[in-house]
Image (cartoon, rainbow, N blue to C red; front, side, top):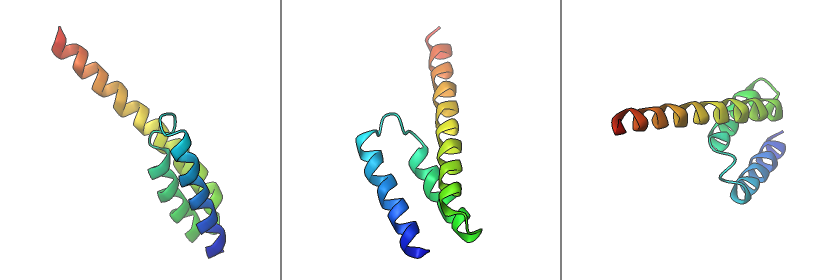
Length: 74
């Protein structure tokens, strides 16, 4: 199981290098989700869910920052 987790993590990191712009927040979320999922014996599912949540949170933060910039410019 440890070897599978290492392979999934390595593959995720390699894929993130090629599409880093689109995967904003996904890497951190996948690592945290994969670790939590590993404890529940669902590492891959945890990594996928963590990636989705991390990406959502990164987009939300970006929108908030954009709103603040627009308010200060007006």
